[in-house]
Length: 266
Length: 266
Image (cartoon, rainbow over all chains, first blue to last red; front, top):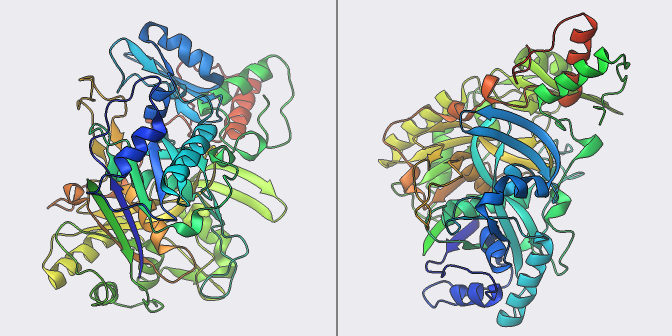
């Protein structure tokens, strides 16, 4: 038998700018009512409390400006009765509605930006927790995003330290001795989703511990969640269908030739 | 504290066409070395063993034909040194490379198709397990897929019975009393991913039990995993960028007007 356990402590206080995140998380995890932390545990933290501690709060009146500031590239837009949804690539390489700028779970009149560098935040939190507990832990920071072709949102890893975010199965053999077709499991995103099942959304449990995946916990901080981003030539969904169609139409109308490669022109 | 446990029994035998899946899964889960099943547990089964039991095996020489037969619509194609990857919408509404036709984990000379109706397969398995154990269980069938914009694959729910696949949070309030921005958690896909972390890929553990989510287990079989599919007008990534671009270019060259809506023409 192989086993995974995920638990989420109750009762973290509301996080405010300037809070010591290591102290808050360490205190919540040291609750004697919880299993004691152990080597190989992965601490999963909703990035919103990291943003709050880091003071990534701006006035809500600036929400559209904040989205624009966080945007590297607009991927798709869709008008709806309440306005326009912008699906964009943000400066972290994440493709998300509203660039990940969040208008819930913040004080009235404010919106919350993603951490400036979630991998760096994860490394700092890991170093602090390691110092407190003297254990080999991994840390993931998460956010929530929609997906093409599927209803509903799932949590993703947007910051990582000490976790092998991709489990590279290439070259491994299946039970029939043939190379596996599925080649890289996005372990960090699956862990983020598992933690979300326990943390929930509206219940004030922004931290979870995942036990049973010590094989994915590394000594080094590693390349972080940024290494999960796949954009550019490797990605086939650089633009929304309507946007790409319109671009092609305009280019033809302007007399430009159709590119012969599979790549979409910038 | 809120807690989730996931475990995967060892030692399911290789499944072959005609096997009684209820019997195989029930025997594996009744192993006295495992926690005894309880009301509210969710049994997660890799769809490959369902396909095998249902005889969804075809000769490997017909792989490209099999992909074509499973395809409703080509979403994107990409040439690479070994051939052409086809990302397609299959008859289940799943957008996947190779339509979900699997060339690993099957006997030499064969490939495996997805179950004909994974929701129906999940319902049958649930009914059979309920009869054996006399418990209120949920059942999910899973497969593995890549995602736009991210490296690596994650597991998704492709069949469901007795599980609330989407947790609709719309209208619920955050800790500040404001409506939540994230509105529907794709619980079934997050459960599929959590189970995959334990089942692994190449280790012969195609079944897992997830405990701690009884609030998502329903008396009724429910609408199934099919209800997670979002395609058509609601979806912004109906075609790959290069395909949509080329379509727009050709339509302009043919003298067609640019549509004024955001929708991509069929």
